[in-house]
Image 1 (tube, protein in one colour):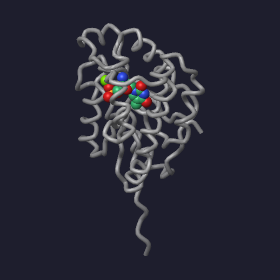
Image 2: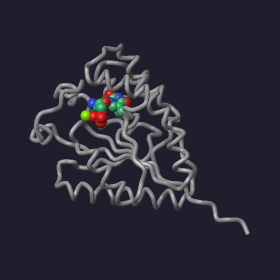
Image 3: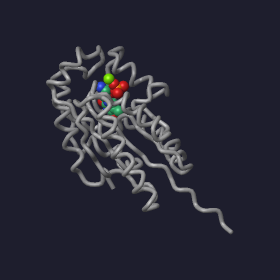
Image 4: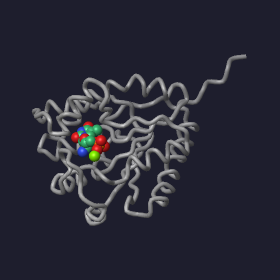
Length: 212
Ligand code: NYM
Ligand code: MG
């Protein structure tokens, strides 16, 4: 008698602007479905420390170079993500390749160029785009001091992010109204997450590759 093959975990991505409430929702969802969470940028690795220094305006870098570091910072976590999924554990990423493309494109880099270093990353089983109107975002108070935390950039990022869901081979994509009551946002997120987990378990398909 062979042991039943263990069902893999689901890869869930949460995307959105700064102050959309991503981190709050990530921890609530993770608690509800018992998932591992990874926040990108993952600032504790050597690459992550360079990114942290750049975001904190302690260092300057060419736009292409920092883009590649953000991507490398995801690639250095792929092994861990795949092992966790294989092990039956769900993984939730707080930002992913879509942030990478949106913030760099907002600075004027070409979309195709921005996309290429992330081609082949594990394909999300679900991406939740926490969407917020600029008006509601403004009511949430001032932005922080980090690079990109200014209205002009956030507006561009929002436009690009909201279009990424209709590209090919990005996986299932759902837009959530992040301007609602915080508990309602969680409820909407969880409804989608549960559907995604059911679908992974039903299909039993291996994890796919992003943009391929
Ligand atoms: N960011 C994040 C990028 O520019 N490229 C990326 O690939 C990722 C993952 O870093 N303003 C930007 C978006 C944010 C900033 O993220 C730090 P957070 O979630 O505020 O720590
Ligand atoms: Mg931030």
